[in-house]
Length: 415
Figure 1: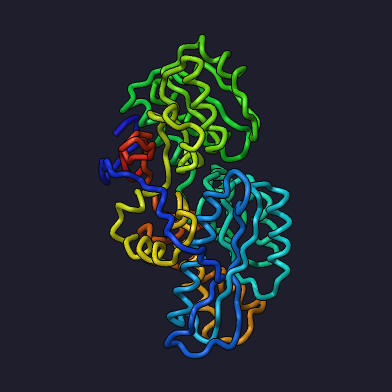
Figure 2 (figure 1 turned 90 degrees about the vertical axis):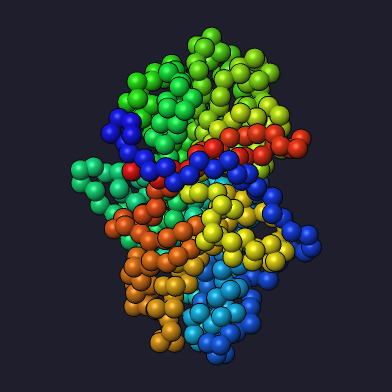
């Protein structure tokens, strides 16, 4: 307990969060194709879309999202989960850009067979995608969005849901930021920090949440610097913060820039811990940071997938599917997001032959009612469409057998 925030210690795991379950063989690229199971021959088609970065610097996370959805669809088709219907995957690449996300959201929403979408990865992309899908009554379940404002839960005291069709299975920044701040105060014993963020919705929001709790804990933020997404040279920023002698750096942003920041900080003799959020939690971080990344700390949603008994079937099935990319930080969450949609579809489409306005509205209602045991644990939503699960994990970058990897240092439920 600290400053009124109570924690339940779920575990203090020192298990390796392996992010490289890439199996040998060809890519499993049959999009949602599976034999019709005991539910009988499928005569109609319904589509679940994916909007995620399938190319570019964040594609490691996006491909894991796509594959998680693909796996859930194949399993549903094989079992005949939605009787009389065959589910297809319609995956679109948003390249982690809001304007591209809006374009592909418009494309998917104009397809009469698309009932729902899993996505997006980036909160800034979701800001453009969510209103488009909401107007078309297309359900959207994000495996990764963490910005609180997307659901309206942040608008105190007059909270009002923003988009009726929007749901998410990821814990939000108003939990993740304070979780990180409490770790910094209680575990690192840090009294001072410098904040750097990338000015994007996710990075700035997460940084502000960290700052608020860190200052409540008695810590002092000595300065805040910003960078631009895509920047490669952080010499100027690091030169400005070095004389401040802060005990840690908090970075709000994603792994492409974070890996360079960690490397260049060490080159400048800045040897304090760098901490960030789930946007940094990827094995791709070490491709650039390498040994300089050791000691970096990141928070991510949920407990480590490999530590969950509920995720064993998912992990085994993912390996057997022979995807050429690892499921990464959000593969299991995308799998659960798709399972939520499929469960709602089974309640909505089984006794109808048409995906129309009435069935779309029912799908929205059924999605909000879903309460399932997913790969990541219990999955259900509050009245805003936010997940009711508040478990997070702090990971630390370590070197094991000559290889850098993320190791879980602390898993807690934030209350």
